[in-house]
Image 1 (cartoon, rainbow, N blue to C red):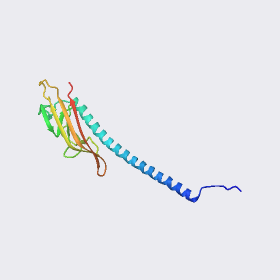
Image 2 (cartoon, one colour; image 1 turned 60 degrees about the vertical axis):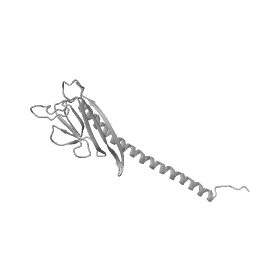
Image 3 (cartoon, helix red, strand yellow; image 1 turned 45 degrees about the vertical axis):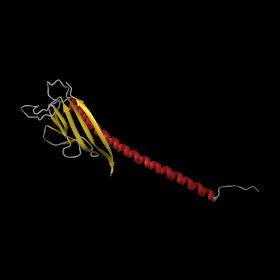
Image 4 (tube, rainbow, N blue to C red; image 1 turned 90 degrees about the vertical axis):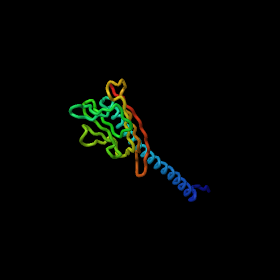
Length: 178
């Protein structure tokens, strides 16, 4: 008589237990990778938002004039200062003749205001918290034989959840054209 062999109950319990343990470890690693991916995407989104705001500011400042200006109806470039150092706001006249001011507006969001009055428009997302915004410029007056430029220094954090944030420090410059 031939005897058929099969798996014993103990062998099946060990195999199923080992499979369940391996799947639990793999599932935990998968969840950790999903969380890390979400965090990386949130930081990238915040930094991209800040990068876009700074690039837009630099592009507009390059084509502007009258750095540090206070616009009035009689003289559109009155109050222009040849240089400014570590100022927390910056005003200039853009290519269309509109006065533009960049500032933190007493908060933690980079904002823009047009025509010296009216509402402030936010340039950064609420996930980007700016702790320091400094503008420095030189060569704004005509006839001084110096190329006008502006340096913008921004420091702050970008957050992706409660109590989770990443520090950043960005410096960029824009040279006046023309």
